Length: 498
Image 1: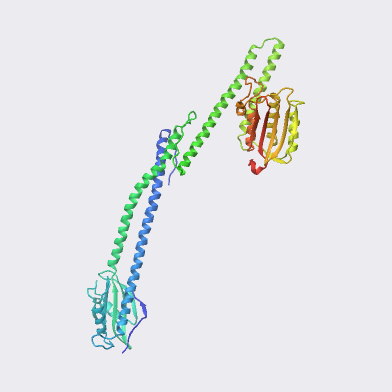
Image 2: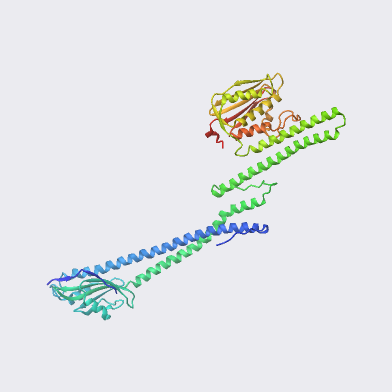
């Protein structure tokens, strides 16, 4: 006698607007801005942490649910496989094969098998309920509809059914001898307890995560306050800075982005302080120079008499002072323009041709005393007019401060990618202490009482050199002559001239 377990599976069912902030509320507005930044940092931090915790809880729930499903399915299959294995053996009570004695098969199986948690075994013989495993969560054989359904099975069936003990997942397998169905074996699992344990575990994870979120939010709020502390200090310092007092500086601590911001802020204050100091000195010196000329003009006009000779002498002096004031204004405009990006109009220039032209023009300042020393060979990219202006200032300065017996030499050359233009003289030289001061606005070396220059010539030369991304070198000692050299990059990629 052979018993067959049918393996065919069938499906069963069981928005805002801006407004102008009043002056009296600016301080409060700045504080609110910092607080808002702090709140935004904390908000993003809490949102990220809460989102991570929520996703983690969902993932844990999903993983545990999937694991429970696999365990239930494995348990259902294992029980049916064990029953199939026992059906192929012998009845321990008689020592004979079970044959068509399905009741003995079920009795033996139920005695030997201990169902797992939430698991229950149900048997039917000849279409009627037979025995169940001890203390099932709910006896599914009490449902006549299920009993009738299982009695009529032609193949195994997996399905879910509702019960007072919760949802039950079962695998029902009919047992046949030949073509006659003898009984039905049903293994069911009631996962309500395991599912409740999963929910409890996820709730514990969520609770712990919530506590961690609260603690982390408090720490993050404090940390954000410490991080934004230097910014509040920057704001406070900036609020107390005026155009008459920008001496305050911030203490740089650490090497992070805040420290870099603090150092940059201090560097900005250094530049502003230097700029304001330069402006004040410029206004003081320019005002002094112009007031002197105006005083001279006004005084001579007031004292001018009716004598024609005296009038001619006075008008000549007045015209000379007015011409000097015109040169002041012109030179001041040049210095102001030197700060603008369109100050230069660079073009390729033949160095030899430019040098010869410069010497020809400079000879008008000191006929017979100016000569060409040497010329460079090559091309330089620069502003011809501005270089000419700078060299003429140097030549005029040399002619003005040397005697009739002194010689002045002009020259040029290309050295290591730099174009060099120089004016050298054999005059009295410049003391070392004056080397820096002569390039300052209204700065003069030697006899500062002389008023035959504007004091801006060398400042203009230095400004033109800087505009070419170059410099002016001064070599001089008292009694040993003077050499001024303009050094600029010869190639445009080196000069970065706009």
